Length: 83
Image 1: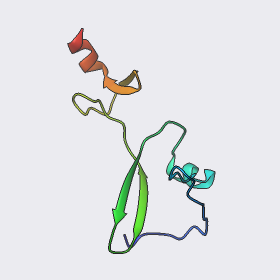
Image 2: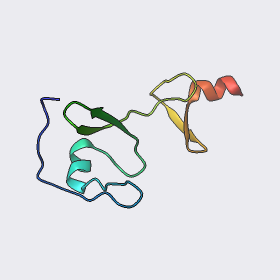
Image 3: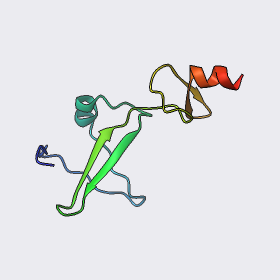
Image 4: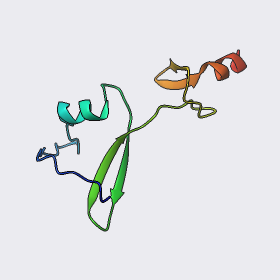
């Protein structure tokens, strides 16, 4: 993780273990409300890193033409196969 940049921003962890990502960081990484983020850890250096997670179909892992079904991503091809 040699490409880490110190933003100078600090946040407290709340009682539920949550940390709010500042708007500047969300804009930089193109993360919006409801997006999923992947969480990585580097135990040796005690570093936690977040990255936008590309949504994919829960059945075939397709990343294009996704539909929301009960807060789950399903591609149009799997929807047609189910029907």
